[in-house]
Length: 152
Image 1 (cartoon, rainbow, N blue to C red):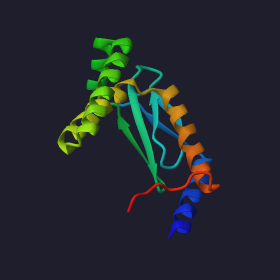
Image 2 (cartoon, helix red, strand yellow; image 1 turned 90 degrees about the vertical axis):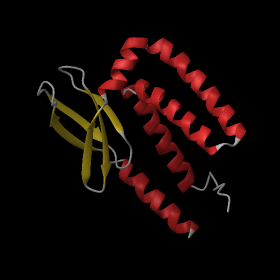
Image 3 (cartoon, rainbow, N blue to C red; image 1 turned 90 degrees about the horizontal axis):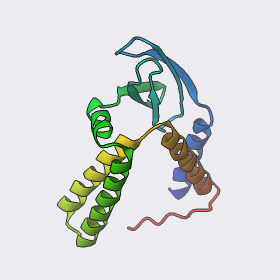
């Protein structure tokens, strides 16, 4: 069973090395938006015409495009990046405290708070680093460098 999991991960890794090109039209300004996406790794991109944010994911042979929620952009615009980075630090500390408490409801609430701020701060630069880290981890797993720490 362990070997089949590694094979699936290795297969995913080889798919990640062949990003697919796609093209769409922005639903706000109708500008042509082009991008590349790798299997299973979300991509964040912005319309060059109006700056509308989009999020893309590929599963199997289908690419799904989601409009970045305008509420997240509005929150970030209102508070600013520097303030939201400070907010992220605060939310992460609250998540650590919730994890230490062991109360599932509190942990879920704090994960949602952290995710909310992270989703505001996502951009193409962070997405590129994220993709590199996923690829590196999959490579380490497929070469046996990282052992599973799964608890039964």
